[in-house]
Length: 222
Image (tube, rainbow, N blue to C red):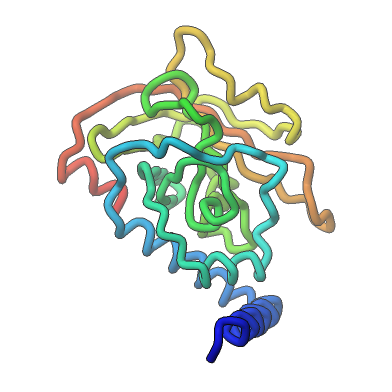
């Protein structure tokens, strides 16, 4: 099979997978879960990438075809950390930047220079029909619950102090606040019958503890 025919074949396969996923939401959720699981099994990279993408406008919805494309591409990008919220059973890899591939496998960082445990560490993620994958569990998260982050070297513990619905245009919520060490989590807030909701679930927490990573405190991410 020559290169041109191979490309046609791969495009046809991708199209077929996309059509199947349109009629099978369970398969879509399964593929997202598999990609997340695979990413969580890979080691956390020790250094942050020198380049990343942070253009909100280029993020596409988590459509079945987009899921199939990401699954088919088998992106090799390693995560830069992990996030866990035990109360809502959320465990995800954290990736540098907010590309479509990153957000279909885990959470993405919203600023290029942010660091865990410092400033306002901001993450975004997709909200799916399945309430148990990606950032969908945030719909159940409550003020007072604990959130854990790790970069593989340290474990950072935050307590959620604020939850509200905001407009997608309120991007100032990711800005640093002088003298405060914050965590900001953002995902879509679905509106029934509206394809592209302008609303976002906004959660924010404050850093309450930092520990060296050990086998014991890393279990929360497993």
